[in-house]
Amino acid sequence: MEALQRHDYRQAAAGFRALIEQHPSEGVLLDRARVFLGRAERELAARPVEPRTVEERLTAATAALNNGDHDAAENLARTVLAEDPRQDLALYLLAAIAARRGGVETALSYLGQAIAVSPEARAQARFDPDFETLRDSDAFRELTEAPLPTASNLARRLRRGRGER
Image 1 (spheres, rainbow, N blue to C red):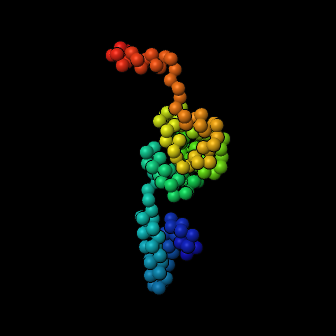
Image 2: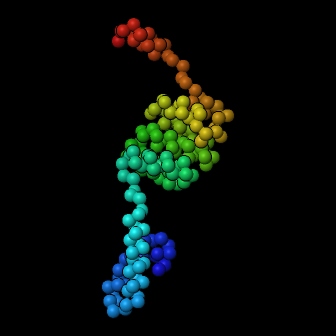
Image 3: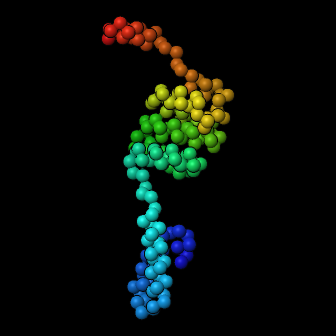
């Protein structure tokens, strides 16, 4: 019963099964044990499956962040980064989490990494309310302002515009 009250449904189910097996002649006890075993099994069946793929974990991390569960979002994003250290959305999520927690330097570091992988994150971060506390920071503005084109990039764009490669 303690396991059931703690919502440890696996342990509760195992305990009720053992009780049923060990006391087959206890009618009233068996009835109650079967009722509680049924409840534990229903709870186990209703639990969501843990996200497995990178996409599932990123979706779950985003949902957790949106629900204010920073720890779950962080854990999920870190599992993605363990597989792919250049996963821009995981880096971006960690930046948002750090910013929400007041970790300015950590947020800027993760955001810089996300932008290095995916420059499109620059524009998103500029308007993301998660980074509101960073807006007055020179380092944030440097990260989120569009970089000025270099001479070689301009020349390349001009050649492409004329059909040259």
